Length: 258
Image: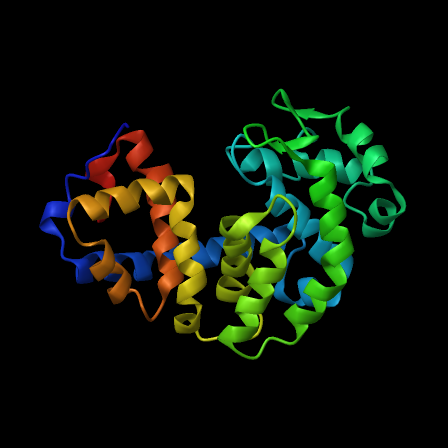
């Protein structure tokens, strides 16, 4: 694996690493999530008010995974050949239209469209996860998900929401936790204290980029200590995703602030 070792880790304590993650997560990631999704029409208000908007958001999150990377090929609404643009152009991000289609009819529609050579009828080629089944399942469960989102009061409510999304065909715990990070932690729907989200934040350790850092921290024997230092803001662990994308994978170690 490229860049398996981090030249700076041996000189950083768990507390220093956690402080770096929390600072960068709040200064950069939260700001970027709110701004970028806001430009696409996904805000705390719109996701709570509009069931169709929530449906659209969940469908796109369902596609936001390998091999549909980088994430811009899913979310770039200004690109007519992005997943967002193609699905919207053909009405497949419209809840009423999707509800009216059978799964087979939806599958036949998705088979016609490709993004960067990737057919939209599957979201995970390795596991053969059928997009039509995922999208239909989102549509069937969106009312319950919306009701849960509107009534968040505690960390336990968020765990229930996570479970509802995790249970959608093809989604799983990691993608469900990405949704929680975006809307609960970053957009602050429900005003839940970040410290109540630790059990869900841990599920992002399985994300491809984050998992590289899990291995690095384990190698230095400080993974558990870093997680402990992040207890007040556990989703800050996901700043490792940005670090891997922007620095580690590009061998920009000297420019990294860690």
